[in-house]
Length: 179
Image (tube, rainbow, N blue to C red; front, top):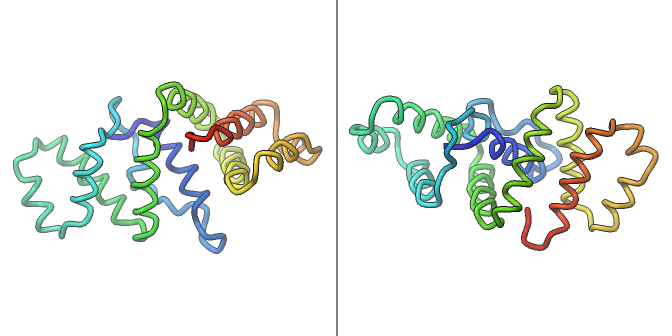
């Protein structure tokens, strides 16, 4: 299913793609991006299967999962419930972001995981503030991100650990093939 670090990646990027009028917590607690998961990530083939299943009726899903072992079926159903809670646009974005993650190099994936592990370690209110800052950076050119990170406002708003997380994310954003 989804690793915790990848789940955080999806949550952060989901916030970045929501219209400003929507809540910044658009990924519901039961979504695949918010679930804790086994060590393995979804493979590209598994992602395709999950996408096809997300488009099935409940009856068709039940039939497709009838012969799947109980524990695995429950994990899949829980992930599908989370996907069902998303709007069609959010669901499309979720699948697009996951596919984009697979296009990263192994080094980039490792950096995303490390950044998100650090982000997850922050207390919830601070994590949200950092996520919102990252959201802002996704829509800025590199020079504007760098200028923002040098500003007194940025230095006053975030402690050194939080600034480091934002800086590392900004570096990832600057890479052409990255997120």
